[in-house]
Amino acid sequence: MIKKIKVLIVDDSALIRTLLTKILNSSVEIEVIGTAPDPLIARDKIKKLNPDVLTLDIEMPKMDGLTFLEKLMRLHPMPVVMISSLTEKGAASTLKAMELGAVDFVAKPKTDLSNTFTAYASEIIAKIKMAANAHVQAYERSKIKQQQAQPKFPTVKKPVKIIAIGSSTGGTEAIKEIVRALPATTPPIVVSQHLPAAFSHSFAKHVDEVTAMHAFIALDFQPIEPGNIYIAPGDKHLEIIRQGAEYICRLKDGPEINHHKPSVEVMFESIANNVGPMAIGIMLTGMGADGARAMKLMRDNGACNIVQDEDSSVVWGMAGEAYKLGAAEYVLSLSNIASQILALT
Image 1: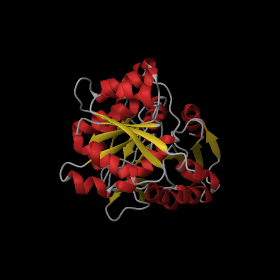
Image 2: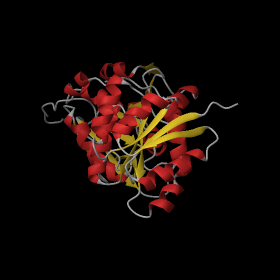
Image 3: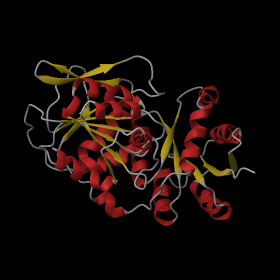
Image 4: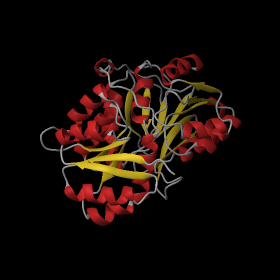
């Protein structure tokens, strides 16, 4: 008999509670054991029902979702998947939730909830299954206090190396932890993180606030220079190509690759073909296998690659697949990746 994943849904919208219950109960591996319209009722149900995974809305009565999440992750850490809106405000709140310890999020459509939300049923089910096996750590206030903006310094031109980072689930925080430890003189970093387009600018702002480097959304034909972090927008693939003596960003539309746009596969393949041995590839925490094959191509073409280890990953999907293909020269905990970057550059 299959041991089902027990889910508690916390949302003030009766429609969302009904839709999520229907979607999740359609999986033979998941059982919705309860719902709650606000955090106070949820608190009691968590104690009584002991769920494996919690889905949590941000805007709710009596106590907002972020306040509740902070308390939960401090006192009773457990896998939480946020239900967030595809707005600028929703993006900022969701990224804050990731900072507080939420595993992942499900984007809530603005209109036609019944039909649109149901269309993402397979994605929602996959995220709940992933969350049930995710590595969850207790939230510590001291960790957030370290995230102070650092002084910015002028960059120098002519990159010697290019650092390429691919990530998905758990990656928003993993990226911040790495770049927080890097000086302004670090070689340029290009990033493909799986996020909706509405979240891109908020994410770039969050990254820029914690690093001495400059972090921003990449622009088409933008030259790549040291001290900068170029983040793929949420609705375009990012490629790195050579133009004369310099490297530039190219933003490409087109279909999703490996179910993602931006796709790590697209960025890593361009790095393999155009940067070769001058590249450092880094694969972080994330669900699925996007970018694994191209990371192996990077190594075959002379790049030095690092994958995040299983213990420090929220989910060892993308990094694990890259490791299995032999794409990694180093397998490191998240806390050791920045120092290895500095050693290699």
